[in-house]
Image: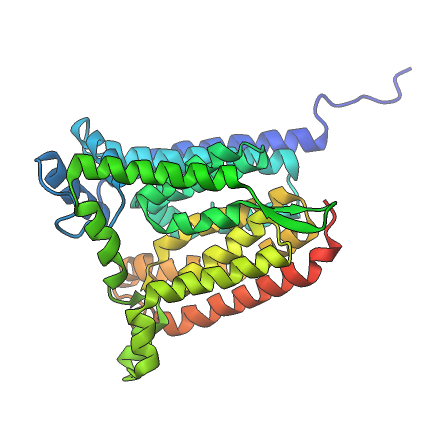
Length: 388
């Protein structure tokens, strides 16, 4: 007599399989949609920069403020005008597939999947700027996701190489190298640095800069030095302060010496993370948010890699990283709402939301600051309660 029939799939494998199938279908649909959307928004400027480079001109002689990897991708334009965009979008979608696979293997389809859902597939910013527009921040996000996965597998030199490549696309990821290198020694009770990761990242970055100089001349050094002189924009609180007439010495200094303030802010958070033994990915998320909050060039697409790093936090399997991921959800939702008002809202309703145009910095800064303070409180206060 048969008293029990066991299903071929128990609930967890079946659910994981279903999620993987949905994600693959989502990826294919987005890739096709991105292709048929064509060249939009800042990608139009990319094409102009690549056309200039391919014709023998200095790629950094116009509005190109990106690293040499941006130029290298431009060679794909010779194959097809949409080839560079599809590489960027394809890299992001493949990285997303690897991230989902790791989340399912390590945490499964649980509450810890929620930060991923809100930060990536349901986030209008990721879908708009990353997929529809195909901005190069999506490529940075892909490289940083691969860096996280490699770091999780103790392939530290390869993780450093991925971060170095990300910095060759947009320079600021170089600041994340020290955060990625943190190693909390549970038994010894102190924090150390993974120098293999740091050195490999700096080596790849330096090699790329030298290669850019030999290929395109000294424009690479010009763009690296003048990048700090760009004006404040959109999501920066400095824009609104200037608009209100608050142009006192402090505001002028914050703008003029912004690069130093960014370094100081990142250094402060790094020091806290180091001495309080904050885990590396938690430190990366908090350090990255600090950089973006202080940096005067405030564009929402800069947050695309940050959203993926937030989604990856549950991979650490610690109580503090879980709480930190949940703490960052309001910021993720805000970024989604912000981009909807910035882009889709103007298309659907005929005009851009006034608060985006005139008060973006005033609203963004306190949300960023609140998220950072709460995040630091969560990681530092609860670090002694971690259970790996």
